[in-house]
Image (tube, rainbow, N blue to C red; front, top):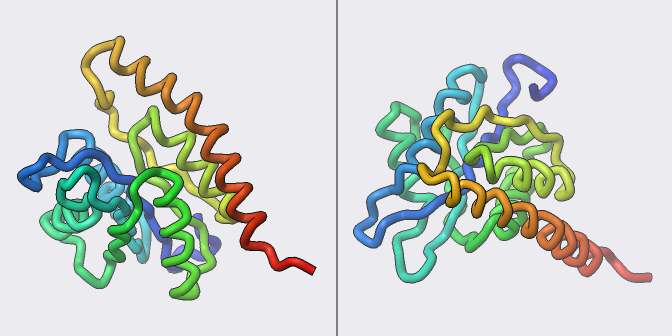
Length: 176
């Protein structure tokens, strides 16, 4: 995965809804559980829960970090990114956070099945070698109509986010 069996592996967990009272949604719990199960197969996982506060609700990342702690993950294996407001923000913020720590390995990506392709592509476009964390086996929505809504939303969001990422990278490039 990261070249050496004992090398650290960053596992970025993309956020999902947190209820106003601070309890995690079922989708968020499933994403964290999938990431934690995957992390048990790694020699030195570094969990990076990402997601800020939306609509006055508690930030997603600290809620995910608490779920990881309850699963037995030590604080030293958790790096919280609690500023991102959407998927693209998460990719950018996690990239800055990991690079500032000198991390240059592969990045494992954890999310729901419908959301995972966009996360993988954006992390690749941000310059990372990516590893797919097997998504939760339970769909993010019970209703077939709702599942298709989320899938179609991702189809529209991927090219838009890819364009925004390309523009941001272009703006960040030094000019002659």
